[in-house]
Amino acid sequence: MTFDAESGNGSPGGLPPSDGGGDSTPGPGASPNRGKPQWLKVRAPGGKEYSRLKQTLRKLDLHTVCEEARCPNVGECWSAGTATVMILGDTCTRACRFCAVKTGNPRGGVDPREPEHVARALAELELKYAVLTMVDRDDLLDGGADHVASTVQALKRRRPSMLVETLVGDFRGNHAAIETVVEARPDVFAHNLEVTRALTRTIRDARCSYDRSLDVLAHAKRTAPERLTKSSLMVGLGETVDEVLDAMRDLRGAQVDIVTLGQYLRPTPKHAAVERYVSPDEFAMYEREGLKMGFQFVASGPLVRSSYHAAEAFVAAAVAPGARAGAAASSAVGVASEDDALDVDRPGVQSRGVVAGQLLRPESLVRR
Image (cartoon, rainbow, N blue to C red; front, side):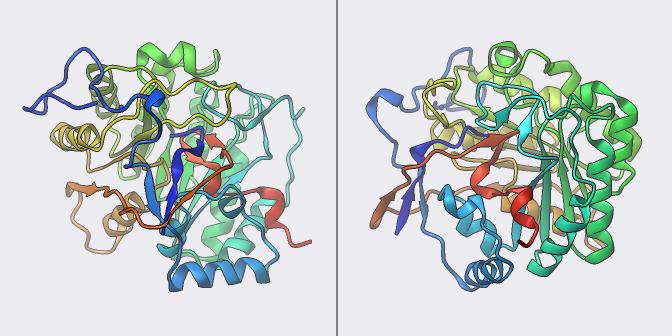
């Protein structure tokens, strides 16, 4: 059985030239006006680890958006023992045109118990890899950096073996805030560039900056050169192949180790439209070019998201004792076969490239 992923996830199209180089216009890909391309299919969730995680969630009385939004990646992520948690509330102070997370002013509200609540719940789930993502909190002096750091430290105390990735906002470019998170020693520091330079002003919130995002990643690497850094790009919003390749080069210029590229899917009619469905061949070309640029790992495919289990498997290998530093790796992201296709009829939510179908809401992490 497969799920049709076209319902939209607000995340994070075109054939490349035969030599793998870029050109100045998007490739043919698939037009949104022609319906859903066949490559937006994934196998229905199942397997022993998926079933175990689902049963544990029920025991903890945790209800995830993974299931409620019928995320197309839930089977892969859960079967790999990974999950993504959004902390610092559910209200973002910014309003990007790709993201369906609620926007507003939280007025400084933070739950001081959340770091321990999240750590306790995730420790009981016995996850191998946890991604902590966050809403932007421009209402806080440090942008929420100390809260993120406290959550990382709480997780590491309870489950030292669990790998932790922090997928954070730009903290308004505050270097001290970036250092606070990095010094909490997450295994991966991630911040998403989201889109190409040309699309930044029209797709991201006006307070976001392409160059500031690059600086956030560069400063994290300067603070802890041994820490893996990661970023994500969405495609299908009207960018050209050359613009995507330029953005990837900019990320390498900031010493980013891991990059993921995935198809943008519109969460609601109020959000930015999908301009094209990028073909698997073009995604494969981005993977090849990224490895040539020097990325340690590239995950590139229609359903790849910033929190993608293949990248997490690479991280696990990279941080293992005796791992060969700087070993290049790649992930061929396949397209599931079509049998018993099932429509996903409810849109999801994307925050910095993460599908809300992969998110555990913070309020659901506290046992009622």
